Amino acid sequence: MKILSLSALACFLCLSLAPAQTIQLSDAQAQEIGRRIWKNECAGTVEGLTSWNKGEDFASLGIGHFIWYPRGKSGPFEESFPKLVVYLAGHGIMVPGWMRQACPWSNRAVFLADAQAPPMVQLRNLLRTTVPQQARFAALRLEQALPKMLAATAPGDRERVRANFYRVAAQPLGMYALIDYVNFKGEGVSPTERYNGKGWGLLQVLLTMSPSGDPLEAFARAADQVLTTRVKNSPPERNEAKWLPGWRNRIATYTR
Image 1 (spheres, rainbow, N blue to C red):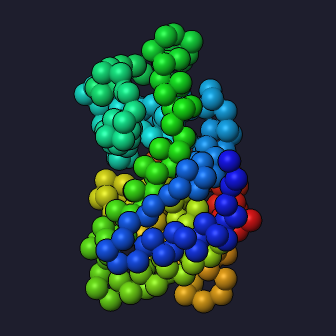
Image 2: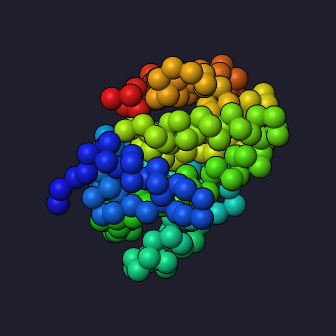
């Protein structure tokens, strides 16, 4: 299958963001964006599709490390794996019934001990074979993000958010950057996704970025600033500074 150039992809997707339209990805486009996100989150490995980070209370699954909480647990981060499951099932993918429930592994130790157990293998196989669908799910999150971000923004700042969004979207790597970041750190509208009142989602990046200069470089600089602030404000016991180099490497892909 021929992969479209990112310039062609950007042109196509920018048209798809016009009013009353939706983001539509061809198989080639979904595969390319999915490949990039998979590389960012999981180093492109099958094993990385099922992860549970140290210090976390949830599993991180799929190319986007979609969050799945065990029964009775919740946290400040939006749970996204159940939404992915609903999306996959709604698009003709056979999803086992147990994946429609709460995460069956109660903690990281139990999860890692089951790394080669049949349920985990079944889960990885589902995630390995649905990369384009997961990319489309991530694109859907972006599609839903702009109206939510504008609604959560002070009236005087809405035009800046909208303008910066479309400045980025018009660039060859812009749609990838937007889809990846909203999948990576969310929309930035949830009141629970804050440290010391400061968010770290796409909204905060668009509010922070300069309205002039190269849009992708401005977006990447703003993302770095927002994530650095997140780390400074994070609870010390989370030791989020250990993640910042990897986050910066990811942001760097938005400009190349």
